[in-house]
Length: 377
Image 1 (cartoon, rainbow, N blue to C red):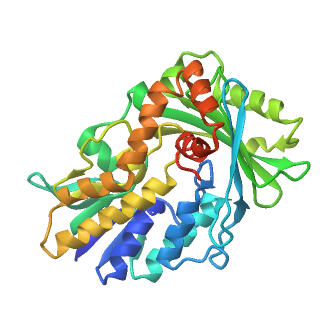
Image 2: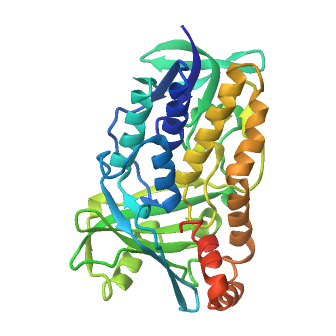
Image 3: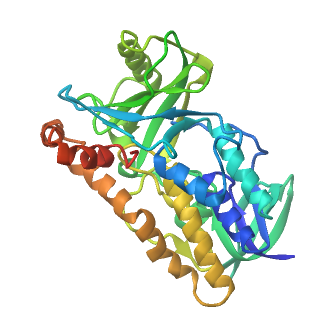
């Protein structure tokens, strides 16, 4: 069988792409290495834009089984110690924290509900016809199996086998970051606020803590690889130090078995994110915010953009090249701004503190906090 589309990876980007295509009656094979539900190491923060997009897809977070916790404000502490906070006012849509196990499952189910066919597969490389991708190659035990499609969407994450085959592994320390996240049991309730801390010894990285469901908190540290490699402490030590700092205000007990680390391929430039027959979305396309390491909302936006382009490819009105202006319009501006802020503001304590001082002016507060938090609010 030749599918209209094969989508590799059923995380947020892949699930959105598959759901969008299947809703339009296209034959879609959605493949992932794991069965669902499955956990995914992540910071778990979901900006208000995510809920708006869920509404557009017909997903009600209150009924979809998503294990979420509403947050109503964002607080950022600069290297100087100055803190600024902004608050949400909407009651109908809101920012939240949610476990990836439940959030990804809701999107995955939506794709299947819309008509996508799901299979567990170990995809090793694209299937080529000359210079065009015409499907994917699955490894099943010692056997290689070919699956053909008119268009392929690669949403298989930071370690994307499809992207690696085409462009190689992303190893540049300036284009990657590392992070560690753990859950903690709160000893008293936390305010429904996301707290970002940019201490002088971590910038342009940061640390975070915020409440999650079931009386827990999500706590972590994010560092760019270049700065991390220059340090002597490991991520576990940095997390322990930050946890100790938070005990006075937000007493908690870290669940050591939940501590996990991961690598992030950062958005640094507007390189091409397609090849003939295939488009890259989410982490596979390096659509990760360089300030925060956030990638869920960019993955969803690029997944939708890839699906919209695929629909045009399938009806013969465009090629995969039409994906480029779409993703640039959807995420290029915000992710490009984040990279510039990381390079010229967040990396310099004096500049960071100066910008933060300007943000004490009410008219500048929301735009500055939105930029520094990766448009979290």
